Image 1 (tube, one colour):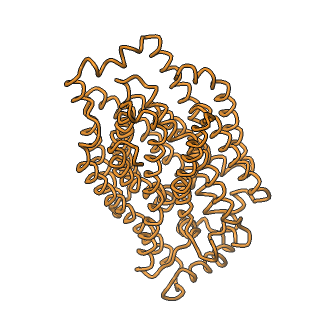
Image 2 (cartoon, rainbow, N blue to C red; image 1 turned 120 degrees about the horizontal axis):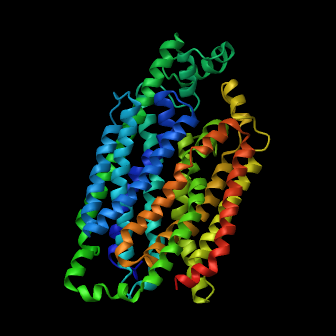
Length: 500
């Protein structure tokens, strides 16, 4: 990191704080929506997918604003403040309207759109200096690692707040109870489940003795559980304020495109003048070709907050090394592996670079798609023989003995993380290198826009999860990733030629 431009760490730390807040929310969002409104994973998945799509679509608007005004730093600061407002709204436990909750999510999405792509554009501009040009890929990998340091600690923080609130009101956590309480309150619970599993779990989580009235228990547990979720969003507010402070204190270390253009107008446009209209067109075609392929990676990868989280809740034994864990804890696995693996991947590529064997960025992305396909192959194998979701719900959930080992999800998150490191940080680097100078913010927004399209398809995961067998569900993601890998491999030579 000593060879990197000094603004890199400042930008990475600011992004780390924002990502801590964001992943606090994403770790609990699906389960919060299901518990708050008594909806199933399919319905929660539609809200989750719409929100995740909006985040990245609005990055296009954020990039356009920053490119037009050349005020990247002001746009970023505005984004942090807008996101903070959204988290404040989510923290209010008295809000019962689904419309208000979704509106709060849209406020966060708007703030994120102003923040995310533009900070990435500033990082890319650090490497326009020829002194650091060769370190661009490594710089973005370091930047990406810091993002995931924030993401690594976010889920445990959210879980700690929710579980603290439960314990302070005489309850313990159980992953099945929220849905069972809603079923009891709605009158849809069978007598067998009521007298069996529901009564048993009510006794298990009531720290002050078995409840005498299941109706009172169901109401109080749900209210306490949901309030704990609301207060967990407070962690995100603290993280946003830290991010704001870091960015404001260090913003002078980051490039200022407007000032540079005013002081050296001729030299600032020199790179653009060298790119004739044909070259710019070819570069944009190359960018959009890559954008089209990564849509399907994000469709598969971001199931970590939906289908894979539902699988953790419904099918996974929530115990690691004999210690009970919450379903949300698996959300920490991906950022933990990013932080752990990034130095190894940087070292691998550095070694290959010295031997002149380092694959091009397009080839790395193709390899990443293949690795993602393998992750879901493992899910297919691990899910063989599991009952359908409808059968699980009919019996009030699976017992610990009927659930799969948590190491299945841990292994899958490990493999998906390796795939992510071959695609996401290098994709950001690729965009910053190939995009025309005055379209940096917009092209970073388009990269995020491709992510948005993938996210708009996320709701298909919970639909398959609910209506198909587990093996069929995961097989769809294997096929999608494999086709994307093949498409990318077919374009590699053209992309390498265009982006030299």
